[in-house]
Length: 292
Length: 341
Image: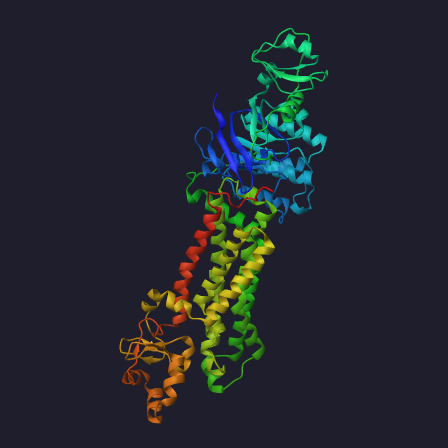
């Protein structure tokens, strides 16, 4: 399987803090990768690195096996929609589409116009007058019109209503299937990510605590609800407890097993949401520098 | 409606594949700024042209002793400040605004790439400013020099600064200075304030000290001399010593440097009347007779004006430096991104 993005031991320091610490992850071509993390965990920094807006302080990122992020060759194949969908605000929607067309050698103008019509976004409207959701949709429209091989979306769902969210996810799935497009997107709406994401990168305090295929993750994790005595029944010495509960309580714990457990009544399957909460809440953070 | 992905027939990465597409986008993106520049410069050009036109043929008007329109003349003198306006209101927000609002994340991740985008943006503005500044400068030059007998004094900064070459360089330098401060400060208001301060400082500096003459003599020495002053032995021309403010220097027989002002204050009053008259009529031989020799570079008053030539020299160096500085900030590194809080 070829990789669309290869992230190797990437760290990113800012003047007063370290946003990412030795993050390693591989995003396979054609996959949909969900990037999850709490606020300030380093998701946007990682996406800015992939888009070439930032350079790593250490480590390396390569796109499509050998392209440097931010290079003209890479930018011709990558579309990035930053948080809040920033598009030139002083012009009309129609101008924004024409400007985007002139900034790219490959741009499907008609598709962009059709999508805007479908979304009922007036092309004569100034971008600054659009609602947050409409602006996000405009930015996504301009990105999709470039027919990118890699689409990087930073919290694209946050400003959309539930219907728009559902439609967008369906549309993205369609692009993935039709064009083999690779998608990376960060979001806090975990339940909806589960519908389309095939891979998960989970960042906590600048460290990628999970970077795997979601099916594999779900296969290897289980929820255990029981007493400390019963816990002994599920231990085989090779598992790791992700979410720690007080030993005397019956609070559910998420446990990762080296080998997928079969037929144990004390264990129930996990959802992506369970998994994300467990890792975000309980996975050990790196000591030393304070979280950012 | 059929879906049409616009393809490129040229080789990807070559200038012919992206420049023709990019320029219309730049024009559209910066339409307001570009129109504002055109309106400002063309308005000043029209006013200056009106003054020239009202007076009629210069020679005829001089002979007739006509008095030209003083109000329009005053307005024309404000052309001197156009580069400051360009620097503050066009250059400073050019990159500071997208950096402040975050829209640069859209522009700089498009297929064309950030370096091409920034370079083409600067080129489009520089081209417009060059054409309009030069045009305005030509009209103003005619105003100042052809009609000069009607002015009490043309040896003033607003005359020097508004000839075609200086007007052009001043405008482009203003634009680049503002743009550089915009990428440095990344905030519109701060960039505006910094650019205003810097431009005022440059103007004061240029007006008060002939720094550029001393800095870039390389250009000065190589310029042909056709200034209508006093001819020197080497074929250059000496400005009349009354115009000591343009910074002429001599060295006396002891090798000490003597400015024209010093000469006027310290030596001239002590000269006998006959020598004063001789000096007024034929300065160069008289200077030599007094033991004063020209100091290379500073004494010459080359074609048009030494100050102008040095300004062009300074201008070329400054433009290159400013463009390099802007690209040092935006090209390939990420110092422009808002820092994490």
